[in-house]
Length: 269
Ligand SMILES: [Zn+2]
Image (tube, rainbow, N blue to C red):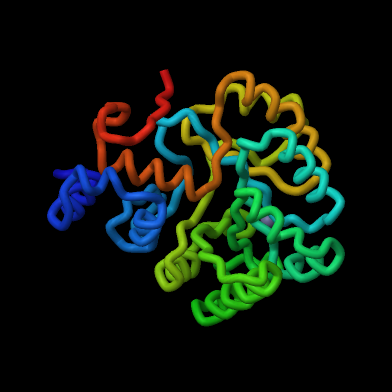
């Protein structure tokens, strides 16, 4: 039996040449997101939308993500820390309530984070388990959250990722992803913990890992310990979008780290 990545490869190659595909940028890859031809990593048979526990193992990058974002001062501390590492980009998963709230108290904070190259993903409006919602309810919740984000940013914004509250994977999440073209972003490292424990976990990270943190003091301290180590050890900290685009590239080019195709690759040794 053929595996899924082979099927994806064949589907896309039937439409465009491999060389042309490799020239596609993020915007074009983005156009593929949310289609049923994206390789999936879901547990169980029912989940049809793309669901990611980690990215490609062939790239020396990881995605650090911060959920909830309900404290302004703690978010500002993370922003200041990130400013010390201008190449490091992360993804925030704020709840909708905090989008207007934090923007009112620090005007332009979300736009500033986006302008610095960070990404913002959906985490429900009021931190409710999407699994207990009907599809209609979840769609309404997502649209309300996205409107709050667009309002805070003062510009349109393509939301690509959802981190389900309480990390609960559900049929409603699956349908929401399909309806709104979202990728469910779970994680391969994380859940928080004491900073020295988190640092050790990150030091053992593999290429493509997704790290889950929250905007809380402990995770700020963990980030403060981990960022210098990651920089010294030549890790790239990338947004979920960058991680996912590399994942899609690998699924299309299953040779992994080969070069000479016009792409810059950094492979894990
Ligand atoms: Zn949360």
